[in-house]
Image 1 (cartoon, rainbow, N blue to C red):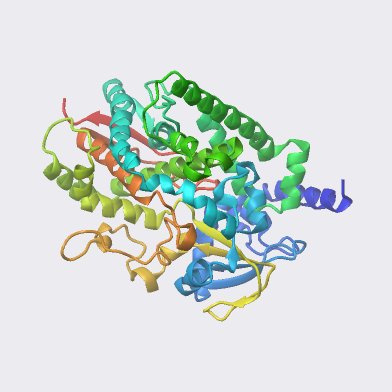
Image 2: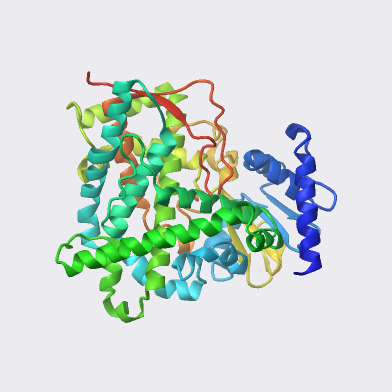
Length: 494
């Protein structure tokens, strides 16, 4: 092993251990030699708020050296002009880059990690699913099934027993089951009374943690952890093996079901197997990698948004009351489940409240790109090939120039049109679903599922977030709630 790699790893470890004994509030954000790294490691829960503050003091863009030995400049921006330039106007120049592909190496042949040329070809298959009539016909049934068999029974049990639930775990398990049904036609049944063990969820949690630290630590450090089998990389290796086995099993089960004539449903796996004119080129590894990507994209983002949504409405009774009034206008009936597309489309204020939650707590708080050649951003900053571009959607949500002086407030009305309906905001100012070529194709499905879950809960149950919890972002690749969100549940229809 290279002596330089060993030295860097030891220095990083010693620095982190020594700093552990210092009060976190006294830690500076700019260290000699190590720059941002030590404090980012120890104060990661404050990182996005700190970035927001610094960007506000720097006209929305800062250029810094991450550490003395990486020889990589990092430009962080919340300027919509720069975001539009990078993600749309000159998207062919700004790629996800080799560093991005290294961080997500466990996704193999997934379209998510490919360059623009390969991506354009493969997206015809991976994104085409969302345009199929069979997909739109199947979606409401999947929502209803997961509400009936999972969410409502768990909440009823909690209400009857007077127990306390972690809402984030509830939503995470719900999205695993709903996503697995959509992706493979199989129900993981992870959201059941008693919360049975769910190896898929555990593997995904470990992988998300590892991805976060791969983005924070220098590559040499996490590569060494991987080689030695320690830290988050040890969990990553085990999680990758578990997840591959789970997906292999799901694919085999679906194949056997089809051979026995028991298929007939419409899901992503069936769509890939059909393959159209690409059937012969869709390898097993390609299908596995893209199913895995779908698990992450659909589960973590929606579960996080729902958790933040319930946290925000608990702190804003006026908004909660307005959401409930709208729900009751749509369906005054007792014990109603919201899964019908027509019902969900009428929940305009709830849609706005969920979108406002997305604005304040975007699941992907930063988006990264690497330029393939030198360029000048609209802000006037020059970037070279070794410059990493980091667009901070978390900070953009707190930009008064974009959202007004009340940008820090939870205000669903900012999304309402005067004549009713939801106001459109340019994607380069609101990055929750991405922008440009890599924009999320599952936006409408995600919002429909979240509205179905939120409306069903609020209509049938009183959910009270427990006081005294310290609610802050977790140390992970997605902006989840650290330590979850505890709440008591009671039935509205005793």
